[in-house]
Figure (cartoon, rainbow, N blue to C red):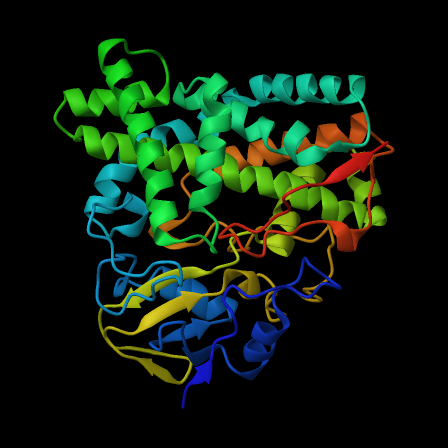
Length: 400
């Protein structure tokens, strides 16, 4: 028997906009897997338990290939893509071939080497914040510029063009825009990155996009593949982290005891742990991770058939009481490193070391340098991104 899937990823309760949708929490209480009906009348398995999510995300017979029959398409996708897709929607060996071309720039060692530069970016933005008028929108003044400046520096993208790529990337990650609008925004970004790849082919520099362009010269990538990879890195590199900076700040302002722990400590271990707990608690990738089974799989007393779609509700996995006691409580002293905010298995987030480092620097510095930071409006007046593939806030008015 099928059940009607609540509007997925669902609208979080206004009384607690940091928690997963109440209807999905009810499904989690019933069973680790639930057969549900999707927007187009098709069915899929909603996987709500942490253990089953990790098992399926690393299962060799579970596919990320969006072109396979049975893949549970998001509601905004009216048909399977005819054009080539990003490597995150591919399986190995092609996924691995493309991923390895850029993963060297995201190792922990390489990312730690960027920490002083990120610290300067954060300090400069806070200097401007403190010198300017108040109240101010923290998204525009701080949360968005930090990762945008960092990813532009890493890729070799001119920051002068940030308004263009931010505007178009926000169209791509919204749920409630038409496929035509999304395709047009993607096309504009692809054309932009294709032009940059051409520049790097002619005039290579010491940046990641030049390394990608070098793969074109070596015959390992086509120009189209290089541009598409650049779009993925540019969009993913700033959109998710910007939302975490703003939403994490809001969550901490709503939990002043936890904010005080972070603000008053200079212990790097506490700061790193706080980032992991905020990633677990907030989990901004709230539309889940979509997969399709390639063979029959027995799990949790159910049989997933070949061709069945799977949706891993990672926000629910990160609130699984079997793994995280008192999961709806924000506790910065919790050991939350096992969360699945970055996914699991071979497709887990390539840029997670960079995201972690940026969040550590941003959170630790902002609250220490602006110790009286406070909301400049009521919580119920803040516009949340219920319509986005990435959860967050559109604006965050603050003062001090």
